[in-house]
Amino acid sequence: MKMLPKEYDKAIGEPFRVEDYRGAKLEMYYLDDRADYSKFASRGRFSVWTSNGTDYRLFVDKGYYEAVSDLYQNEINTIWLDFTNSIYAEQKRLSNKYMLISFVMLFVLLGISLAAQTWFPDAQDTVFLVSMVALFIGLFGSSSLQQKKLRALVDVENKKATDLIREAIGEDAFQQILSNQEKYYQQYFQPAADDAEGEAIEVEALDQEETEEIKAELENKDGENNE
Image (cartoon, rainbow, N blue to C red; front, side, top):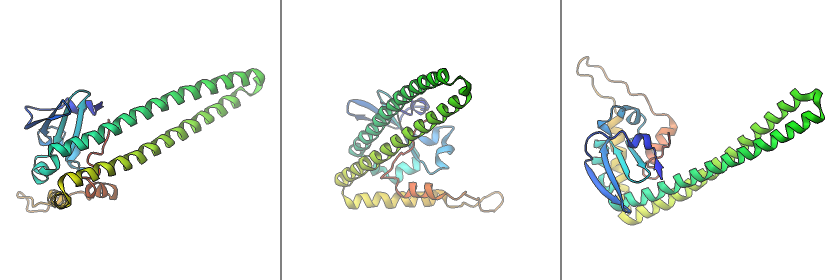
């Protein structure tokens, strides 16, 4: 299952660690080495899981990795990649289903529209407008329903993965990871002194959504989906 394949191809140099995930190669690279590092770090996203459909690559902030290295034990990587692959597979299935529904609705409405224009030639503009409105409402409703199903699945599977991680490393180790993680975020985003001008560097405050994502990073580790 491909996972952010464009990001997968942005690896620079040699991986600092290579592991095995169910027979596939898992390479780990420092996110810091990439030219676009800031676009992730500025949003509090210090790890990016990717795959070309065969092998896997993890891009991770070096400081973050050192702070929560226990989070990347092989057993935990397996649990997390199992979860991530299941979500990507379901997303693909729902996307294909949505496309099929879209084509069916389009052909049905076109048929009805052509028939109605034949029956009511003086009202062609009205028939066309009504058909487009019906198509928009149908597609919007279908998309909303499938996104709701996906979010519900993510919540369920995410809890399962989190429980497996807690069981694998123990509650104390789990809480220690969360503590180290929070400390790293606080340290990273704390305003630093500007040696040249002696002024504090302003760091843009995270909005509520990003703050919640940071606090729940272990439970919603990558979250981020998809280009």
